[in-house]
Image (cartoon, rainbow, N blue to C red; front, side, top):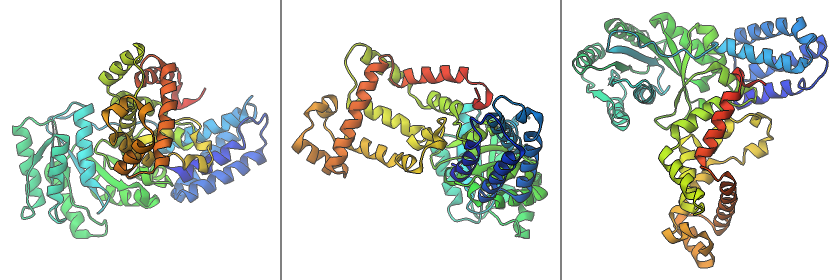
Length: 455
């Protein structure tokens, strides 16, 4: 996520770290590189100009020039300005209204509104403990209503039925009546994708907005469209009075221009970002954490939250007791750890949140491959229960059978066994809890970290 921007800014900042003295010329040279990195990341030009101006004003002040660690001081200024541009802090959904609280989702065709509606429903159900209903007012896209019904069933929230023969305003009003009768806390209204230049469709969504009077109006936008995302959000804001933005497909956004442009151009906060196809791949947008990741400082707080949310506590306790009793760590346990890692977004997502990863060479980062994790799980699934419990029996003919069953090669089996042996040795050192032990260590690290990850 944001790889190009992160690499550009990290390169510029690296030249300053550890320097005992900075001159005005060296600061200006660094800011020129920062400017180029922002422009290459497709950040809107007005945002780039404002960003550089603010950083320059503070950087040329006495706080940096007279600092004992001027390079680090300038990095801190860039970090703070990134946070300011993206909105200072996470702005949660405002659900303080008489139920059902109506949340309207609008956006362009292909931005991922329907999937995001289901993801948001799951987030509200799991984290805010709300009773949620979803309804589709998209009577134009084939199977849009069926898609939302299927997703609603997956996340176990209420679905209000509609058909392509109905009028969007009628659908929304009927859904509101149904939500009241069923004591729903939040009603999410998914609308048809449209182009902001389509006057007829924009008029329709204005009527829909007026009919349901939503407490929150969220613009769902594909982050990979860069600064166009901000410009389109601004166009919609003029028609609908948006209350916030959801950035989708951020896992495929190597540039980061949308994240840095949306808030300043529209004046509306980014409330959530979607970072994957999984139904739980929607996170609140925390500007400070994103800024730290962009500058290669990692995002330990989000990583800790991922671990706490996805690690199965019962399995962790069971594994802890097993290892404590000296029964050892077998391939069944290894598979369980791999599956839990996958549930946290995979190894790539975890590495992305670790401090210092932005400074790794590309050839090293490219070796972080979640396909390998999937392959290892397939290999273990192709083994017999005995082989999983006693890996030492896996030799010659057994390896051929396992390779054939998992669609892999014998070299892959050897590599997996080697990695398992390394994990086995590490678990012996852990001694007390496997992933639970790691979670405790990370939680203590979280408590020691100051805001922004600076020490």
